[in-house]
Length: 246
Image (cartoon, rainbow, N blue to C red; front, top):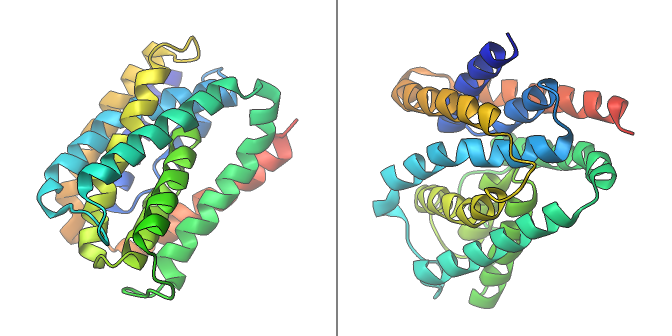
């Protein structure tokens, strides 16, 4: 029954990621319900959702480009390095400490998601990032992405638009870079004993199916309602994690 629930939730999470993002808000607690701790659930979720991220990035790759003098290859390299550092830091983090950090990480991701969904106006660029500033921002986001990952999409869109990209181009570029930074994290996590393969395979299968279905539903879904639903999930999960925190 736990695996059936996991598959169903992962299918929804895959569709949610394709439509608006925030799928990890669902997979993380569900994986924890199968008996693993927060660190193992985060590792397993990252690996499981990776194939869907690759498919999404590949689909929109023609729109992806560099920003403000930084080539796409340079952003690739920065994302790979940052993702690897974040993953290494995660595996070096004591389990008890990470369990205490998870509620704060989910809270941060929820706030970022809410800001990007409802409070940040399209095309808003209050600050202009220079090439070094954009490189530093992408590096820090990549470290966070390798460590936890929630909210990286909106963080990257914000940084890329401040570096001069249009919103549509920034969205396509962040999809590619998200897959790149997670590739380095996944390469490290594949060697981790915290990766639970049965749960990862079930989650990956569900997320892939859901991602394909979600992509086809994009023209028919009220994205605003979906984003509100994701924020409600994130808020509820944050409260629940704080109540259960050691």
